[in-house]
Length: 315
Ligand SMILES: Nc1ncnc2c1ncn2[C@@H]1O[C@H](COP(=O)(O)OP(=O)(O)OP(=O)(O)O)[C@@H](O)[C@H]1O
Ligand SMILES: [Mg+2]
Image (cartoon, rainbow, N blue to C red; front, side):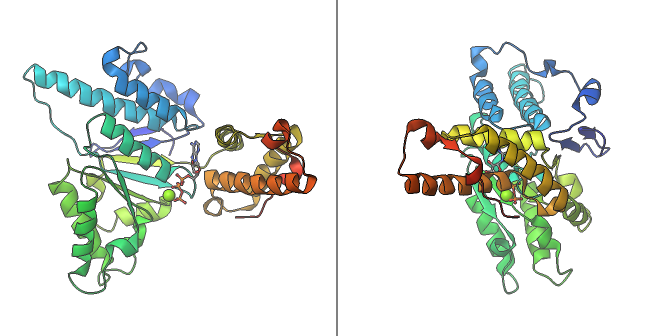
């Protein structure tokens, strides 16, 4: 894909997060004037939303999409006040990306943001996978799926690895789950948001399984793999949050390791943000062990991860 946002003929929008071609593409996108630079007190929800989104590295297009949804909801309210038509749109989404690229994190955040925007009444996230939707006998699947949709009312139903529902063909109960989801996402489209997530290639294939599926997801969002700078920035934010920092040597070691690991692992084998989080959490435990052995607990040492503390295994 060579454009961060594509309008498709069916009105679908595709968004690419973390696009590394941002500079050359910015001219093709609508200008940033969608949201005013100076935000009036009336838009405090938008300010809160920006703060929350600011904690995420990259994802510029996702951040922009959320602000556009905010603007659209706000303008619709103004239109209603003027007696103009203000049609509600379905906000079901499809997230495509490799492991650890932030899909679950963003889904959870969207729930919170849409609660602030009054798009959702509760904003909670129900995470489900194939086994939660698919039953063991005829009729069981529809019941299980309906129960989950009920639980997700007012919030988000997030189905991870959704392509696995299409596994097994016509006779598989996964198809019944898809049909039930499709039916309810139309009937209850303003009561819950359905987000289907999974690896890009599998999700593309999944969309071909039911001809109605594609048009029911107005927002298709790509979560590309992070580059080394973004992975280092994610690690730095995770460390700040935990009140740790890397020694100069440790930082270099981590960067070199990430370069190496990204080169040797296949893209779907490298778990991006999760990989970084695991390295940091293991290193924190290793540092604790080292300090215990040294019986030395000065403030600076308590906060510093040294290169020997960094523990890698190939995820
Ligand atoms: N842009 C980002 N900024 C900061 N942290 C991030 C970012 N993306 C991912 N992370 C961190 O990486 C970890 C994994 O993210 P998450 O679980 O959302 O990925 P995922 O795409 O849902 O993975 P999977 O497909 O394997 O379920 C989390 O700890 C998350 O906080
Ligand atoms: Mg996930």
